[in-house]
Image (cartoon, rainbow, N blue to C red; front, side):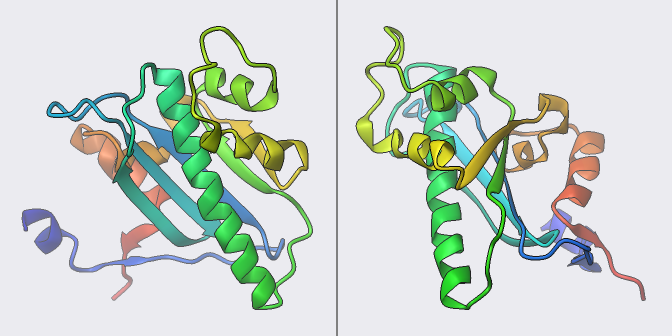
Length: 179
């Protein structure tokens, strides 16, 4: 309640851009942070033409056995969100001419997506999460590395010190209104 009272004058901010019809997705997961069932939490934030159109934070439905698996599952969930948004844009006759960039901070999960070989340490990952490889190989999405200190979608999966929270809050396009 204190946070809501302190941010009552804040609003979502949509900036203009020269490049139109671009989707960008930021995605991250924590690993086994729920102390009751040890499930991970996924976070995702999608921007269209530099404006936030969807964001989510939810507990994963399965228990991951590693950080990489948790991050890979999160990338898969974000890809599902992107696929739905791409279909919605197509139905609205808003063409997309470039792939959606999916910004991610876990290099092991990125390698899992880009390398279709099953590795000894990841062969247990459920098949339902591997569909994102197809979207990567067909250039529908492009998984792109972003350093952890710049991964602002962490705001949806982890607790932060105040100053980091305030810095990341701006990246999710929540700014004080000009009154």
